[in-house]
Length: 426
Image (cartoon, rainbow, N blue to C red):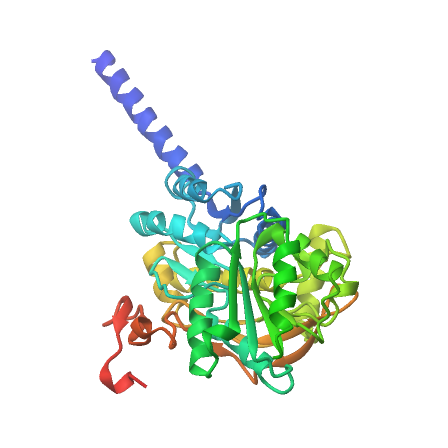
């Protein structure tokens, strides 16, 4: 009898220990951080890792979330696209992350997407992208093409933007630049621009020898019509690209370049003197004059312990996404992905850019569009902006097969690529 009781007591103790261990494991809410800290994209993504660490630190100072502290779980996919998928699986399955903030390139997002959908994880993606996607497991807090690429080209076509007639589409060779330029080419065709007036060229990640390409751009621009360059070059290849523009004396008044992946962080490593007047299109610039932005900059520089560190658009997107996730968790009373997803719709955050950002049922934000002109100090002078926020489109109106599609993750749709009803076709 004593032996039996001893075994019973031992079994109970083991069970009690297992339960207490599980409870201990649940003492924190785990926030996955999936950004490249090495490789070609580290120049852009390391700052985004630090942004999430800042947001976690700030939330913990406020008492955490649901009575628990937040714990950052940081991995380095090292600018290796297949490795992103492995690290995503590790974050969800092994590390038990309740949410993940991460990725920069679309190829990294495409790599992890099947993992998040298979395991029903939740990803907040903070960077401008090509659209043509809407997943129930991803909230897209960066710009869709109608919130960046299309308005930028419209601006360059306008009188204020120089009335460009010819177009050079330069991009890194992967899905975001190619799909964005497919949309832009269709848009330009709709505006009466012929293929003869469009030059399109792609280079690999980390490309460093820009002399021939920049020479070809100058030749293309010398053929009689005002020419503009639309850059979807990503990562550290931007450094030698802009240096070569300066080397060959390309000035903004002659051939303006508008970039979609160059912000304050990328310019921090460049001599911007020869780049003054070139442009970038974003939904936020550090130079925005708004009380919320002053607060954001102060918070960032205090956290990073460097009064010279800059802020940029993807950082603001992470700020918005993190704040919305916290609000959704508080509303749902749980970190359960399905409950948080439903609570996300309609979440509103006062953004550093000086506007109220709203999460729509297509998993895209409403955001304003801004065109900034590079200044000698590495900042941007905002030369144009929309009157207010624009709803991000998951599907482009300029690609025939996409124009008929809509995304709506609320009942009864619950679909990311449904055909629009006839009454909503226009």
